[in-house]
Image 1 (tube, rainbow, N blue to C red):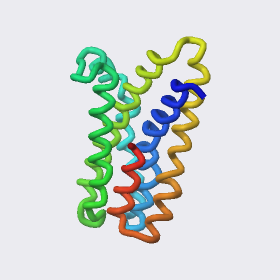
Image 2: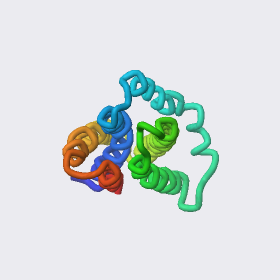
Image 3: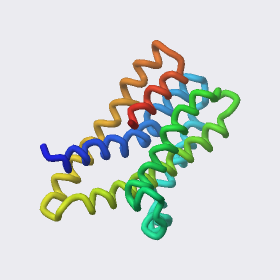
Image 4: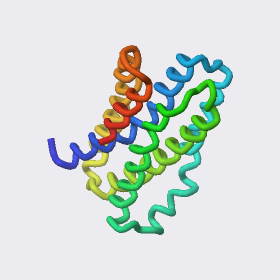
Length: 174
């Protein structure tokens, strides 16, 4: 396996993990803490940044952070995700549902930004002949990332506090 395909694996994994935290782990946590299904259903709105990311995508090409256009933005989005995901564990859904909704929107925003940057990086990294395989590898790693918050984190939640679960899950971003 080439170095480029390994990069596609790791970037696909780190790109998929935040989304699956939002669509798998977060609703399970909210439900286990007694939040009603109507409120949990409204959390689907936090995925809007993924739909509207094309609006701010040009800004990532327009402005260049110190480490470069792709790596610089990738580092920024990764750091924000690495810090914001464990913050979920600091709140109690019964009392802080709006704070959790805001935090989930922040995670969705930075995850969508990371997707923009990683798509551009992958396009620059791979030659035309490698794009098909590179995208397939990326998407498969993206989907495999769903196993962490969709299964491992839920198993851990049976044995430890949710704050620890969110911390461990966030560490998979590294």
